Length: 122
Image 1: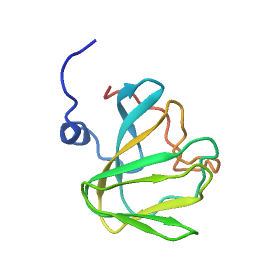
Image 2 (image 1 turned 90 degrees about the horizontal axis):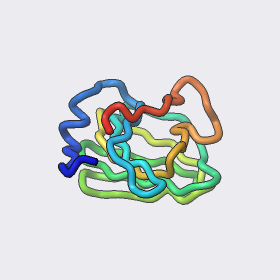
Image 3 (image 1 turned 135 degrees about the vertical axis):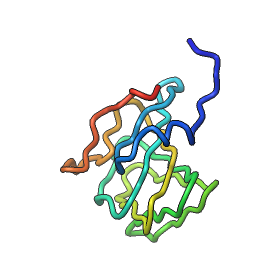
Image 4 (image 1 turned 120 degrees about the vertical axis):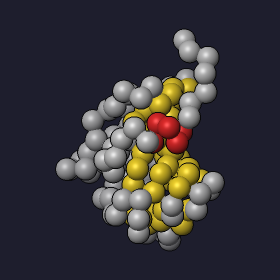
């Protein structure tokens, strides 16, 4: 067990590919992930869990049929379980995600943007 802080900016500097979350820490049954977002993702749902987005750089819009939410650095939003959503950006966005271990980034949809689990930065 290490007793040092996780430097979010440093972890984000170690990769460039968008839509590929990297686990940097675990909290009980949850993973803390960093991710770079760019462009439009895919519409998807997580039926069994909420999903937390915390923006550290850039502007992220989370599109939902119920209305869009736009996040600036330092802001977070929790997408409730079962709500179909689609993250979209105009430029590169850096974010922290908190979700249960094993959550697939594309939820119930799958497809080419589905990221393999990656704990190489943990």
